[in-house]
Length: 255
Ligand SMILES: Nc1nc2c(ncn2[C@@H]2O[C@H](COP(=O)(O)OP(=O)(O)OP(=O)(O)O)[C@@H](O)[C@H]2O)c(=O)[nH]1
Ligand SMILES: [Mg+2]
Image 1 (tube, protein in one colour):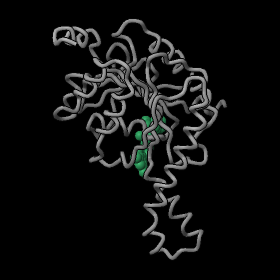
Image 2: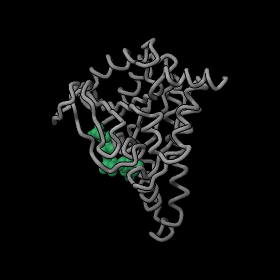
Image 3: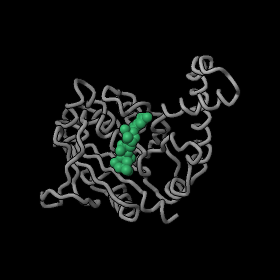
Image 4: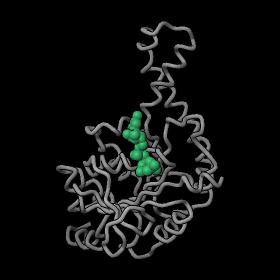
């Protein structure tokens, strides 16, 4: 694309928008904090800019440190309307560009619940790629230790072998999730484990790069990748302005 065309294209897109979905406690807010380089809780504003406590999907969640980001959070019913409206939006300016669907590895015995099956069978996100994030993958270290101790290893030896076992467990659960979700009507585009995102120094490079590679549009890929060119702060000025966070715990309760 020639530079003038590319500039026009990016001006039309204006903001790179990511929707983050996942059950309660899946690590969604933590990911946004890392992407925003923040440790704060976001402030909540209604559509008219009034600050308040409780939030619904149309309210705006804003981190003090990075006011350029706006997040949205909601229960499941609202999410359905939101995903359908925004994934199908024809206008570039209203479109979600990517979806991060979080599945926490702390719940590795219930990685694919009715909620995931429903989402990937019923939600046609069209050209918007869904990246499944296997969050809190580091929690599999505990599972690894448990298994090794059950095999009657001494603590020291179990500790030595825990990392190797942790990798095997991650591979096993990732394969399990992939096998089920790839059979769904609208399967995810990609699977990516995330580890220790609660550490302030956690690096989001792989997350951004993988998301970029899941995008169909070259212009969008460049827009997202450009967030990495210097500091992550650039994304406030330039690219990832809007992320929506959706927690479907309300809906899970109904299933
Ligand atoms: N071990 C580990 N803990 C994590 C990781 N990411 C987040 N956590 C912790 O998990 C807990 C929940 O994280 P949140 O980011 O608040 O989860 P959430 O999905 O936003 O939860 P809701 O807002 O309740 O839907 C926090 O105590 C985080 O510190 C991770 O990669 N590894
Ligand atoms: Mg949260």
